[in-house]
Length: 332
Image 1 (cartoon, rainbow, N blue to C red):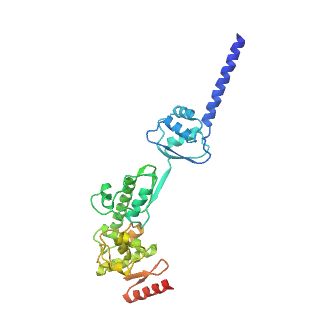
Image 2 (tube, rainbow, N blue to C red):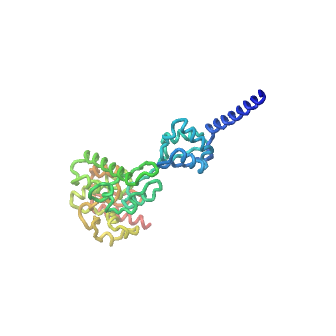
């Protein structure tokens, strides 16, 4: 009898030892992935569903112990939804800690200075991590969809890099960009230079968008803005090529012609005096500041120098010589 009891005791000890070894192994078991893996906890996924999907993805070798550990550590109800980057060879405890931390993978979309509204909407619609609520939305209906009554959306969104989690709504991203532009424009307007030929912040935004499209050289922006503000004060037409191009829309084929310069549209500043009716692009902060703090010089004209910069002139004769030099250089 004592021999039998001894045998049972040894057998029980062996089983317990085996279970304990399995438990310790599972608690320290590495994940199955050998490289970084992406895993998304979806809204409504419970710990058992998460464990099963981890196993199916080849990330976890011990789904049962994953569930056990989650309950034992009190985090089964604390796993946060979102997309996670799981490094290779994590333990179950480390995976649980990651999911409970909510340190999800972050995505980004950069709204580029100088984009127009159509380019912005295309970028939103093509971003795979966004939830698309604005797909198919027109220019005319965009601001209304954002809760803004009336107005044109061009130029209203601040160019910047916006960071978000997977599943973030495109409409929320645009609201952030809209608010940021409104805040920055209001602040810059408050500190504006005296005597500017604008009646409102919106008119300053329009000119800033033209400055944005006229030059990519940061140091030139105040000079370009200075030319335009002086022309506005004198009643001269702006004669800004980017406004003509914007007014042409899809008809623009990459080269602006004399015929195009003479074809009247609401945006053609060769045929119409004053500012165009709306911005023509999304201006960055440097262009906003240039429009509200233009260079105090006396130049009234500028033309491309052929190297990305421009030649500024105070008289028409100077400007004509600069244009001739540019044309000669272009044909050499």
